[in-house]
Length: 493
Ligand SMILES: [Zn+2]
Image (tube, rainbow, N blue to C red; front, side, top):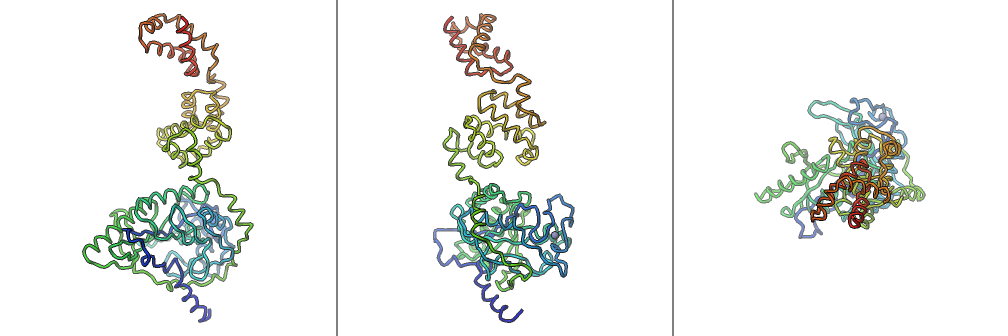
């Protein structure tokens, strides 16, 4: 490699937004107390790794079982062509937040010496020489500076020195936000919605989720930025930001300086700890990756990817708000893709949205709660079609709510044909006025005291009759019809 290229690389790298962040403090809204920004790594839900055909591992995978010479960086090994599914997912997320997809770019080698990266460099579409995979965008008022594809390093335990290469080469999308978060509660809400969108887009591997670098600065120090590395989970990201804001404020109150450094979060002690002083941009010595061809993305491909973006949660909230459902009911539906899919099916079939919405929102969480399980357990059961059959019957008023409750409970413990089961057990709702009138007249003549009590002003006496009819019909008589017919008959006596 020539001297000139190296020199260029260094000069260009200093412009990198990732490694030499833009100084926002010079133009900051002085009313802000804290500034928080994120570099979020999303584990993409592809089948294979980024540059080899190893299957991506699960957390249960045996250590070093999903590896090959490529993803362990054996001397002489070269990457395979970039996993197209991973690239498409990164572009899809970018487009969903209003970013522009970069049409021509290429992988860079980001050099660093650390045991988790045996090649001594990470392959990434970032660094000063290239445009990131998508550029710009904004999500819930937070500006996004770049979004790029890159490979995950291996997992290295600094205490035992053990290395697990299963994670090595796992495809990641990294998002760099501007430090636009004004509080940790804003940060929490934003992350929850962002992950929900990633689920809707079918782009995130939920088992591995996200990990994020969090940069934090406070007004008292004139917004001197400190970075906390590699924090996983929303809870820990928010806790790390909180702990760091407190630490910086305490230092400022004691008249001590804030050093621009990299820290880590210890979730056992709930504090951030010194890791290293901040690297300079040129430490990474970005150079083009000679083993991979340029990445070219056509306009057609961009539009094709854009067309696969589904309706996002915000639009669904808006759509569902037209039905007679409370805000919190809508939130439960929207926050579960599984529920939205069943609910949307009901909407397509013009079933009663309120009845179906409330059933899904109340009864599915109830059954899961009772079984001490969650939505991912439900998904594994593969009973969505059966639940849809049940909803079809409920939404079309063919079965009673209580019948649907019982069938759902049974369905959760064993899969069966719902329509056949309802039929075999005569559970279709009785709403035939004539048939119900017959039952009412018989119940009244068998229980003359109830009528007498009613005439004497006991308003509750007829509830007994309703109970008799429900028992006779095994709960399949439609309560509204029973009440209506009962009142008509009693008033005519
Ligand atoms: Zn491999």
